[in-house]
Length: 135
Picture 1 (spheres, rainbow, N blue to C red):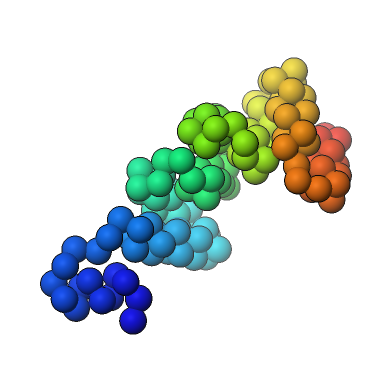
Picture 2 (cartoon, rainbow, N blue to C red):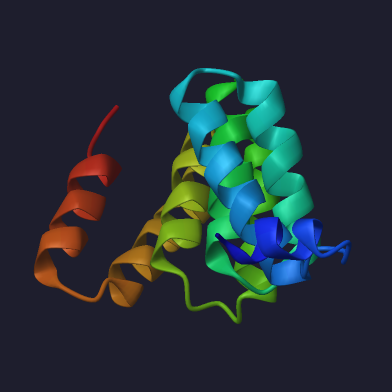
């Protein structure tokens, strides 16, 4: 029995950590099933519960990105990157891709450079570089 079920069975409110895990799982499932609206809502709740965790912002940005809301996705990735201390390769990579789609070439190039510098290995750096070279 997980913590959320245990708390419910005892009549206790679930812990924020248990709610966050459920939001993450449900949000990921919603995105995988193509329910982008539900995914966005769940990842927004997760971002409120865990504002300094990368996974919250990556999920929220991805939901908006897949929904075609490029300016919102770019903003989400940027906000998440600030709240996560500027250390997320995934948030910076997402921001770079969105800036490119918005036609902000110079800013996109700087973000791609930043994402590459944050990459923990050459494989990910190569993937970022390949993405940068796409039209």
